[in-house]
Image 1 (tube, rainbow over the protein chains, first blue to last red):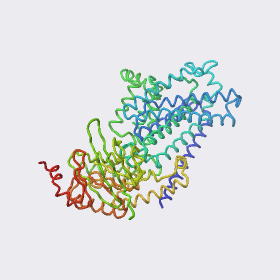
Image 2 (cartoon, rainbow over the protein chains, first blue to last red):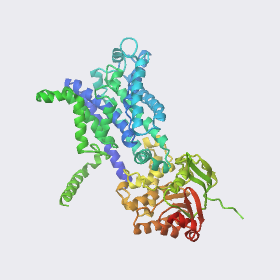
Image 3 (cartoon, each protein chain N blue to C red):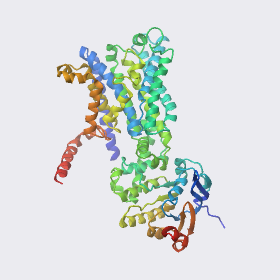
Length: 376
Length: 256
């Protein structure tokens, strides 16, 4: 009986994902300027933000360790993917960005990005995860800065990017850096990557590993007294999370023509900043992977609306001044969410398609309870 | 005559924090099926003994053995694997997890599937998860918690949280159970229920139990042997009747 239910849930989710993929293909096939210039780049950005937020959620929400250097892993992933693809191009594996050879190169570079990030995660995680709380936050913060400076000083990455001309042109012309048309054509790769990454993360948290890391979050001493090797599972989760951050970096290098370390730096004021990813996790709900998806898309849309929205120009002057400081708007948004939903939008619960029929009852019981409280 | 191997044997076990000897020369032998009480006034070092036996502190002197296996210097999780499980004086549950997941977590060392099995949902994964679920439910039934299996652990009433902590300790499949003041903060009804529980698990699992307790009636009722410590030193050990009449024990508890 129980297994039947599980099978039905799996089936429904698979069907939903297949529909999503079909929609992606259809959008990718339409020739329309709005889609090409606005929607497609947005989808790419959302894709890597979702993977970033969800992978950080594993460490922050499930394992309960604050890491402020997650964008460092993303930078490693981005540069790895870019360099690997360029290396293949110079070796003559592909000339044009299409065909089976290029597909293979893309898959290899994305996986290489994940694996190198994971290795780095292991190297950082073993010493760093001996620390707790604020100290871990500080050391990971330091790591994020170190990695940016390291990449800056590697000769073939360089501040200006890869050798032989500037990074941007080399990457854009030959490597993974896609033009708008190519982004549209390969949009399904990004969506597929998100689906696969999210599925793997779900499988991770819905197994003994998820139980163990939640136990470590709730009470480390009790976890080790239950026979759990706390440091092993902490490092494992950190590495697992770094792997996906690397993949997110690879997607980033695909959708950005120019690759510069400043975009991963801590001082970076744009949406790509380790603290900003932390904010996404908190807003979405620490311990809810679907919450991270919602928050990543929501924060992206907020960012997009502030930067590109015509409605900002329609506001009165003093409000427009507020919007010239996007960070101010983000913090206000964060405060509002924390005030009304202290545990984030979804808390620790997950969104599931199969639960939608239960929603009316849940809402009803919620109001019923508040009625009772009012009477009492 | 065949010699019985004690489940737990300590020899001159002790720990010093700087110049302070928190526990000194602690010797105890516990055999299979025995229930031994460890009592003493506040600050006597009872919980420190537990922390030594579970690897939270490393003993600075002496040795301790579980079924003749030397456990000195092992980490907490290795000691749990060897077979010593404990509960805590202040309850330490995994509060944001379901009751049943608390128990399942303690089964982790029995779950053999690896990361790949978990990520790609192999047959081994489904089989193991189903087995673990059944075993966890069985354990919860002993403590009458099976109906609350899907509750959050932190939402349980105090007495049931205590029981759940014991259930979780039992899930590690240990040979020696250390209970740190299981009846602290319980009302008489809950204490009586707990007493029943302890008796049941002792018969059903055939394990040895070492119990710290302040509730004298509970200790006198259930323990076969009692060891009294004060200022880290053992001042008396023996049968309950001997202990209540021991002048040194009376002095330690009531003063001169």
